[in-house]
Image 1 (tube, rainbow, N blue to C red):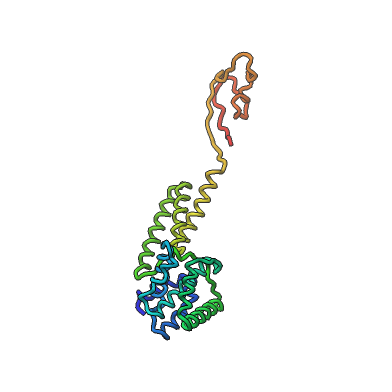
Image 2 (image 1 turned 30 degrees about the horizontal axis):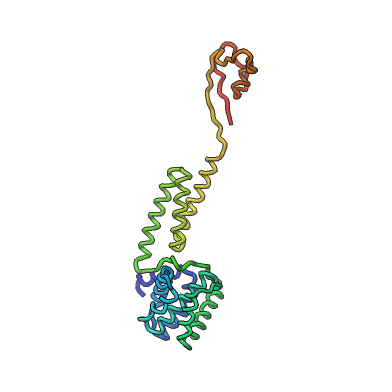
Length: 263
């Protein structure tokens, strides 16, 4: 296996379901001489996303694998069914799932062999301490040669964007970028988690600072008789109460009141 194949396999193994079924796919690769596991996985992802945008996926699915060999068509259809199980926990009933079930059953004994091997592979995965987390395969990134290098470039760009946003010290800018990056992160297999953590922690700190009461200092200069009130005013003779911020009495001959602090 060359470096490109290893990189592609590494990308696929970021998915829990692929890892859970990997042993079964390798088994059929040897027994039936089918395509490598990563190619079957990519075909299943492409089929899932094509069916998602189709107006009648229950009718289209019968034609998607028409040109494939019977054995590879069966494996990709089985992968597709497991993807649907993973998306909704296996509880939803839909025309697509019913059509897919009919296609699988039409393979006869071969389908039962695939089912048994898939379940066995899942069991081995669980015994090793791994689980399969829910995943929406309708927008899952499709692994392809060179994608790993492209991802590295994307991660570098994301890092630069986050750094620039943080340098502004603006909670609004940071929070907006967080929402955008979080959405992309979900679509790209959670590859920007570290950058989101950077944004979240610093943004929370900036927002706390923005809402904390601040101590302000000011020099207040008043000349004698600068605070006068008309006859009858209840504030006459009480400059301290009138201005509401001076802790010391007025100076008779005018001048500086000194520094005072307000909250």
